[in-house]
Image 1 (spheres, rainbow, N blue to C red):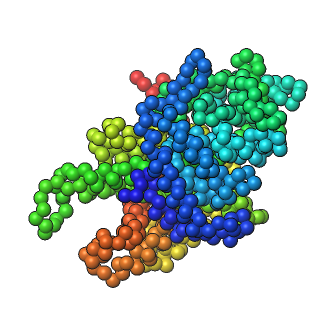
Image 2 (tube, rainbow, N blue to C red):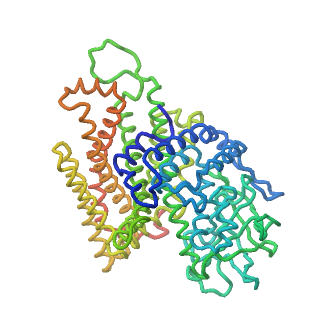
Length: 618
């Protein structure tokens, strides 16, 4: 097996054969690139992740980040220092950004594929680094020329790291309750005062400076989100020549002791404890939440990739382990006189778990890449077409974030099960992946909030415009699949699930307009799960229409025995066989469960809404 991080062959299948990524190269924005360059970049990303990132995981998890209360400094694991410098030197952070800011200008879809590999390589290092990219992007969009020259280019290069500072002890999901304040100094700067919690890489020793993007309220501005503004608050102030000068009054007061993600510090930051914290307004007063959401949307896509990368690595390690672990006799009838134990990958129940993981991982990968593909097309089109692509992105982002991260917990758990008792032990990476992935369902707005956002903002408030566009794309794939007599039954299953989703959405609209609007809050999370199921069914059907004809090139008109012999000797044929079986299993088995979930969505929500505090316990 080439790597136990991400299946590069499946990545190329989605990029080249499914999405036809080279079609983007006909647009001037991407004209300097080619499919061969994209392949080269992805191959180099795999090499770097395998040789430099992945070997750090065990030590980084074991030693963790260390907080020194005397200096109020955080020390990251030493094993991350050299890989980070090499990561910076490679210019990986700005791979899809304009050459004008030091980037390479590749499509976002390519950057997404690279990000999956790097997250799988080291969630700790790449999880910290990617926040710098988000900070740089928001400065690129809203910053002054001086702010761009001072901070943006250094963030894109990774010379400095950035953070996103929103959460407070009394303002988690309720962003409008933020109490951190900003008082004008009279010289264009602001005095920042307050405390932020759960700040990833809020203090670290990998870079000289840290650029905090802080959401705060200017003294006297209105309450709620309308009164929030966004500020650049550097760890070290910078003079007019771009040199760091004195330490700003922002300090780490401690780090969290967590279930996982030990190699990436989660910090409590205090601003202005001595009354001398300087901040710089980014963009306009009172527009902070709008500006921060520009940063958060990128992060929500990336958090989905974090979950996907944990799932991918857990799945590939499970395949590797079950191929080597000998236990139990084969239950398959055979004329062979072989006796004794076989590799557990040969047992049907283990195959079921592996195929389930494979189906969710490959479907989830297609979902994340397609969403980035929509972003790329939104960047090269205009008018109504541009609006359609942007609408698809807005619709799919909460599904990418919540569906992939919810599944990551289930998939890593299933991988543990495949390895039995050893899966529960630290000698293997399964338990670390499970511990690390759980936070992804909480990062950047809990998955319950993503579900409410999907139902109320991306669907109902949008008047189902983007939803109908997505449904029409699914219809096109169903029509294409029906053109092949061998795929018609799978197309029918996807159509049944898709029709059920549309009927449920019609019911939700009626509830929203009537007396049952409250029901939607109780149904939002199960609805997102169902919509994720249906979207993955569509993407698997799409992949089936591509992979099945290519498989037939190897085994058409062959007996089952002859076909098996051919595929066992032909790596390409075996790959397409796996793609076909993965899609058939998802649509023919997993998606059929969605029918029951759709019935659940029609059920009375009164028990959920009516239960009160004292009723939960005796």
